[in-house]
Each structure stands twice: as structure tokens, then as C-alpha cells.
Length: 113
Image 1: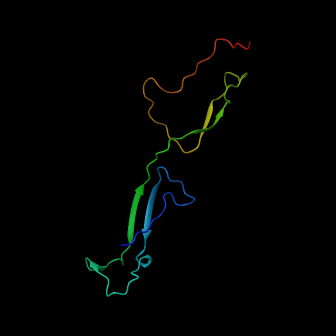
Image 2: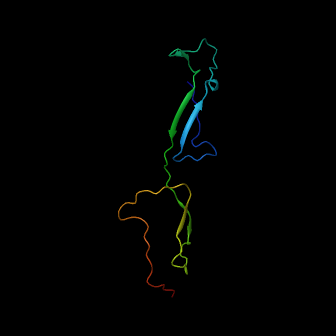
Image 3: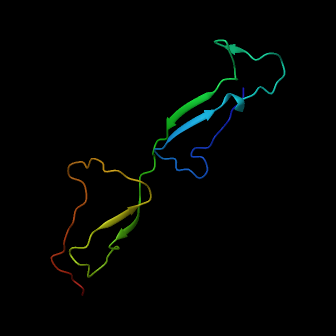
């Protein structure tokens, strides 16, 4: 038996939620032992056949806010300022359960003393 291990994600590629396709052409697999003719499966030499698999990696790390504008505890922000959150990965709009979500709680006054 022989095992080929490819790290997921491969170096330089994002892993969470991505679809991977692995294609190894028949020329990429060879028998290093010279013990006779290779076995056959359905009339084809094994391992002299292409290997093709695909799978999708599971996203197990939730997105995190990397930047928030206006910044935490900012004062003097105009009321029409847009609230902008930048996440550390791509996100999509999901279903917000009843009773949760983003709530704005305006202060009746600012006590600076």
C-alpha cells in the first residue's frame, strides 16, 4: 500500500467552503516494483487509469470582524453615518433567528462627567 497526502488547503489556497478537484493522469501513477504485469480491472491496467475525485471543504471557522467603522466608543459621529463591518473571509447573508440580529441602541444623552 502507498499513501499520497495532499495538505488541505494546499499552500497558497483558501480552504473553507471551497470545492476541490483532484485529477491525476494515468501517466502520473506508476508501479515502482518490477514483479510482473500490473493487475487489471475491467480490462484496464491498474494503476494505469486516471484518478479523478472532487469534494468541498467544510467551513469550521466562523467569520470574524476585522475592521469596524465607526470605531469602538467613537463620539461625535453624525447620525447618518453608515456602519461598515469588514470580515476576514467572504460571507453571505444568512437567516437571522427571531430575537437576534443587529440592534441599535441610541443613547438619550451622553454623560461625560
